[in-house]
Image (cartoon, rainbow, N blue to C red):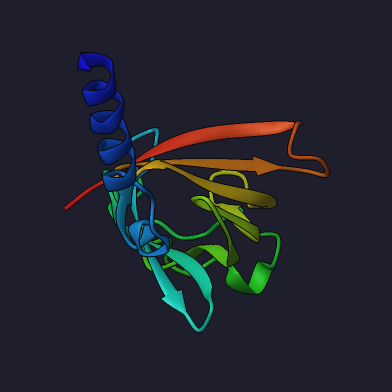
Length: 143
């Protein structure tokens, strides 16, 4: 009887902790703790823009710009407000695919998969070609 009670409790807890599509929305602290990315929904897709930097100014005391962008016309764009995550579609089970992530530290854009581990932990996997060859960064939800 005690085992049945424990199993029922676990089922109730797992149902309560179920990830919902809206759980990805909000502000996330990047794994290197250098920035906050605000994830939002536009139409049926998910996007994310950089809304806070731990060091927003360059060595000259001016706001950081996207100097590594391969498009020379964009190299003076401010990094704050930059869309880093683009065009993600919800696949179910806490997974968003078919989007890209831009890394302003090297000016490169990667294919990306977003996976919610729980409502406060997001795995961001950037890759080239196959998702097996890439890097995962774990982000934490902020208030």
